[in-house]
Image 1 (cartoon, protein in one colour):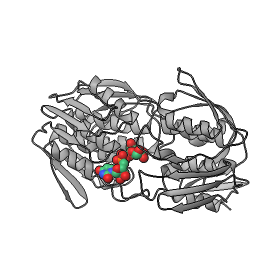
Image 2 (cartoon, helix red, strand yellow):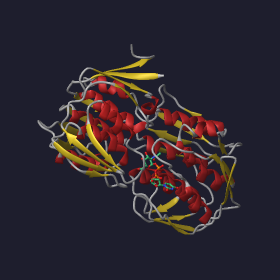
Image 3 (cartoon, helix red, strand yellow):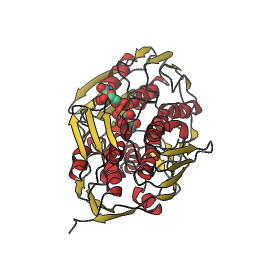
Image 4 (cartoon, helix red, strand yellow):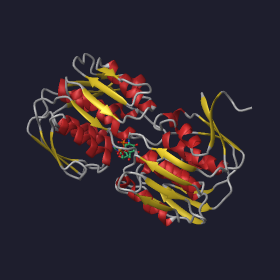
Length: 424
Ligand code: UD1
């Protein structure tokens, strides 16, 4: 199992190119199931979740092809899907496999997707995906660990999500585009990945208004066609590099970003004393603070502070002067990284969904274990400022969502290596 070996204490300086957004690419790939024609996607990040989604589509006999190695473009053609099933082996490694449920039932009238099961950051149910698809006329049963959906043609109607869900909104939007008549989805997620998916679907011939806002209106069409689409930049990868620059007191330029998607994080970093300027061309410049100051954050749905940046911000808070209060409101049990950071010397008190971080405290390198994708990124940031060597175990979590993170960090001065085997 791969580990990272990180020698802390280096100030990061230079330029980092941000990759395409994993969380926008995954639903876009699933959307290719909605048509028999080819869907061509560009700016796909080379990360494990994308490989898993490609395997899942191939398992369904969707033709998946890429012209380059590593792949940054994919063409998918779901002409002959003979196997509308997402098996447990693939779903258990990637919860977003559930995104195939909506497109499959809408186009083929049948889908079988393994239940995602538990996960390190809480229970993460899919009841809202199910409720919304039932509202469009699907019959759904759960048997032997699989969700099975059947429909003889979905019918549009109004559905209000009782709670905001990102992949839930995407799944149901993909089903609604082929439903008969009008669907109105209320209390939808506002994340930029939803608007990006809608843009692709419209290129494929769907009739959608309001995506990116709380109410989405869809006029169903009988079939969709092929399209070419470029995936938006990854705001979580960009945010992670901003925090890497800030925690090391460095100076970074991030290119190929979408600064408009980074609002909550940028204003928090400015509060901490970090200088950030954004160019309309998509480059974000960061100059670290002489002395970081604490800030309070509460995770929230977009445009609030992203839960996917909480672990990385916690690492920064350990180096900021004063008390930072972090409140996690999206997922339960998302503080596994805090315990590891405490082992490195951080002063963190946990009480339910509240983490109180008192800083600055010197961190010292230690062997630590990554527990989920973003927690691992938080540990990498902590290691960048820790004395001596930090070994991070189970970095397969980070490989799920960050493209070549160690190479990108090394290129701006970090001492980080990927090592196979145990530390001596
Ligand atoms: C997506 C992102 C993930 C991010 C999360 C929140 C992808 C592939 N993943 O995950 O990186 O951390 O949004 O920004 O885009 N919930 C229910 N029932 C449901 C669905 C969700 O109760 O049917 C709850 C969840 O347990 C959670 C909250 O709603 O408490 C938000 O989850 P959701 O927005 O669905 O997260 P994901 O779409 O899984």
